[in-house]
Structures are given as structure tokens and as C-alpha cells.
Image (cartoon, rainbow, N blue to C red; front, side, top):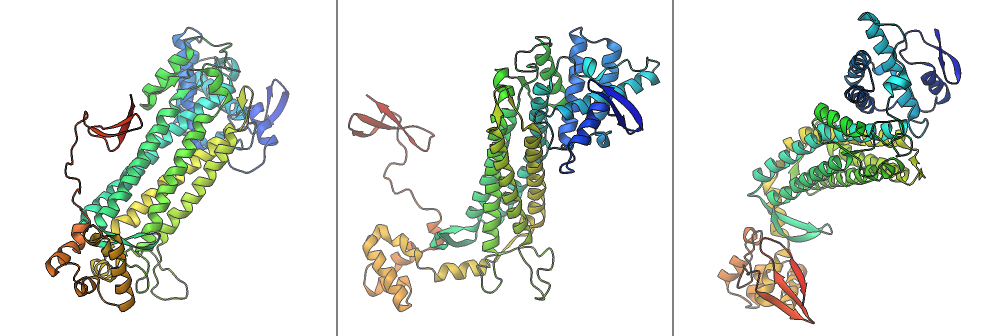
Length: 496
């Protein structure tokens, strides 16, 4: 053990620890959960300390020797080489000051060791005066939050979602020729192909990726440069721009200075928005997993239109049983992520005046959500979607037994007559074709053509003119004109 000092006095610190007295106080004060700050957060904060040392050198505020050794020590932190040196619990001071101090102390001591090894003077690098120069926990920790979460989204979740979308798209092509019964409200509906159904899943995941990329762009705005309350006291006016430029070069992401530093420090709305996006992604993945679970139910008494890969025994008492375990795993991940998102949303309400005091908890929730989503998505794509098989015969059987093909008769015989056909077929056990022919509603050739299931999956456009010019007035009612807009699925309203 050794004795260290800070502004509050002396503390006994483990001799091998790189941290100092203030970190030791936090370890003593916050023995709460045993959960440390996310490793990705610590690495991002190391990058920020590196960028700060380089920016302060460029701005003439830090001597070259100090800057060099601080950058070298901070680089080691950013590479995860001192992970054991960051013991502070996530349930700590809400600004994250204890973690910021932890970084400052570790980097200062390690930089001093590097300076000594290089012939420098002992204790020449100070955690506050040098490592923390131009910064406050109140702007540095929100910056680390944005940088670390943006990197996690970019480097982990986007690739996982892209992999799942590609796997679903491959299955969509594999299944494009299999016509099956559609279901709404879990009841029989009109036909579609299994490929069309899977194209919807793939599109859902692609849109999830778009939501994640939007979150990355939102998090690109950084609070650094605001120092204590957003005024920038004790920092250089060009410090924030330099930090953003250096971080962009280090990470490949386009970071930028906050448009308003008071908002950037007082509110965590950007993180709440990202949490909402993650909740939406979790909902998408859960919906897909639940659908595959339903379509694969059986194998004798369920839908059984899909055969899910059997990855492990499903029962300790029923031999041969295989359960949809990967679907159930992803569903649980979705529930957990949406719960974490709710915590972040609640944290967003907890800001008072010039500071939100829940930053460590937000960091924990967002990073855990991203990690679980990314890992769950990869496992689901690899161990479930990639091995899916379709039971074309089962799909055909369900389709042939359905009476919802009657929908295709409506344009020919009307809704009410079609409903009577369906009711009679249901009551008598006869087919739709038999009932239609018995009542001489259509001839045999026409009813066979209309009731062809594959044709129902690609209906012809019933309108006489499928394309309309932008100038053509479609409707004039009450002084409002509705004009068709080229290459758009909707109409715009123009008031005259």
C-alpha cells in the first residue's frame, strides 16, 4: 500500500494501482453493484484525453513533452491495456466525476512512468492541471457518452443488423416460389408467397439499421468545450473544434461541436432519442422472432410451414423435442433492451438546471442494450435464419383448405354474394369452386382463373390509367385540389 493525497487529504491506495486518492475515495464510497463503467466508455474517454492533450499542444497550452507522454498513456487506455485500473461503480456521482478523475489519475501516473523511463522528471504530470486541462467532468463525460455509444452502434450493431437482413433476403429469394396462406389477427387471410413474407422481415431489419445510423448522426454533436456549465470557462475557444477534428480522424466518425453548449450539458435528449431507436429495433427483432416461432410451431399440431434448425435438446422429459430456442432468446433480449430504454428515458427527465446527473447509468444501459442486441442478432442470424427450411407441402395444404380465397371473387360477384359463398362452403364442407358453380355465378374456366392462388399474390392494377401526370387534377372538393405527384406513393394537398 502507499499513501496518496488529493484536495481532501490523504488516502491509502494499493501500491500496484495507477489510480490515486480521489479514485480510492470513490471505491470506498460506492460499493454498490459491483458493475464497473462499460469498457467501451473507458476506451472512448481515453481517446478524448488523447485528443485533449494533442489539442492543448496545438493551442500552445501544454508543453510538447507532457503532451507526448499523456497521449501515449491515453492511447494505452483507449486500447484497453489498463482495464483493471478503472474500479469505480456505475452507481456513483451522477456527473461521472469519479470516473473522469479515475482516468485523469491513471493517465497522469502512467504518463509520469513513461516520462521517467524516457529520462523525464518524476511527478511532473498532474491529473487536473495537465490531463484534465481545458475540461470539466460536466462536458467531458457527456462527450465520452456520445463518442462511446456512437462507436458501439457503428462498429457492432449496424454490422449485426446488416448480416441478419442479408440472411433474410437470401431466404426471401429461396422461398419466392412458395405460395402460402396469409394471416391477419391470427386468422386466415388472402395468399402471399413465403418469399414476400420474408422480404417484409428483411425490410424491417434494413429500416432498423437506418434507425441506428440516424442515432449515430445524432450522437455526433459533442458537449466538449463547455466546461462546468456551458460557458467554456478555463478552456480555449478553439479547443472543442480541435477535439472534434482529432476524434474524427481517430474514429472515422464525423463529430462536431454542440450548437448550444448549455443544452448539450443540461439535457440528455439525444441519448433518450437513441434509446427510443434501440427500443424500436428490439421490437422489430422480437416481432420477427415471434413470427418464425409461430410459423415453425408443430411439427404435427402447429403451423409447421417452416422447419427451424434444432440446435439443442428441447426437453428433459420429452425425447426428441426441439424448441425454437433462438427465437425465444431474441425475444428475451428484446424485452431486456426495451426495459433498459425505459430507464434511459426516465434518466432524461432527471436533469436539473445545468446538469443531468444520471450519466453513468445512461452509459451502462445504452452499452448493455447495444451489446445484447448485437450479440443476439448475430446468433439468431447464424443459428436460426441461416438454417431455415420451408415445408412447401404444408403451405399448400393450408392454402387449399382456406376459404379466404373467396376475396378474389368480390370484384366479379360482389362482397355480399361472395360472403354467402363463403358461409355456404363453410357450412357444407364444399369448396368455393363447387358453390360458385352450383349457383351458376361464374363459368368453370373463369372461377379456376380467379381462384388461382399465385395470381392473387401479384394482383393487376384495377385502375384504367396507372400513371398520372403531375398537372392532372384528380379531385376538386371544397377548394382543395389533390394532384398526383410522380415517383411518390401518396398525394399532396394544394390550397387555391
